[in-house]
Image 1 (spheres, rainbow, N blue to C red):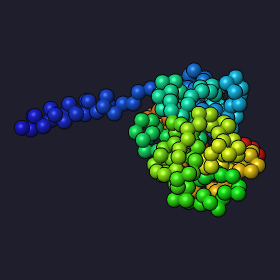
Image 2: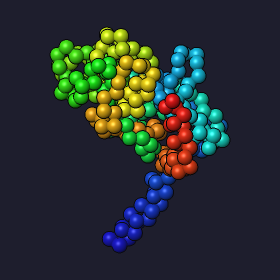
Image 3: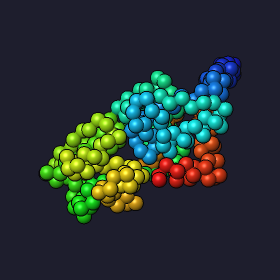
Length: 257
C-alpha cells in the first residue's frame, strides 16, 4: 500500500507543472507584434464614435485604448464591430474591446473583463416637456409609449426585460437614434447615464431623466481574453495608474464637452 501511495504521489507531482502551466499570454504577444487590436462599435458617444465608415474613431474608450497601447509600446488598431457581433468579433479578431461595454454575467461566461472603471446605470432620455411623465419604469411601460432602442446590446435587453406594454422600436443606427425622439417618431430611449447626459447637451430639446439615480445599476470594463491572468493583471494596473495620476479623469472630461 505504501509503495502504491508513493507512486501516486510521484505521478501527481510530476504532472503538476503541466496541469498548472499557463500558455503564452496575450501580453507577450502584443508587446512582440507592437499592435493592440481593439474592437469598438463607433456608435456610442461619449465612449466610441465614428461619424462615417471612413472617419476617425473618437471618444473616452478610444483615448483609453491609445493610452493602454502606448504603455505597451504598441499601436492601437481599431477593429469595427456591432453590438450584436461584439463577443464573436472580439474572440476572433481582438486583444481588447473598448466601447462603453457593460460588464454582464452572460458576457462574462464567454470573455474576461478588467476591473470596473465606471459605474453607469440605465437612464431614460425624452423630450424635455415629457420629463415628469417618464420618471419610472412603470410610467414608461404604458400602452402608447414608443421606446426606441439600438439592437443587439444591453439597451435592447433592458427594454425587452422591463417593458411589456410600451411599443419597442428597433433603430439600427445608434449615432442618430436620438433624433427619433426629438422629431417625434419615438418617446423614450433608455441608455447609459453618461451617454444620456452627453446627448442632452448635443440635442437641445432632449432631457435626461434622473441620470444620477439610474433605473438599473451597471458597471463598465475592458473586455479581455478569458483566463489570461498576466494580461488582466497588466491592464488592471495600467487602469489603476491612469486613475491615480489623473489621466483617466482628463480623458473623460475632454470627451464630455
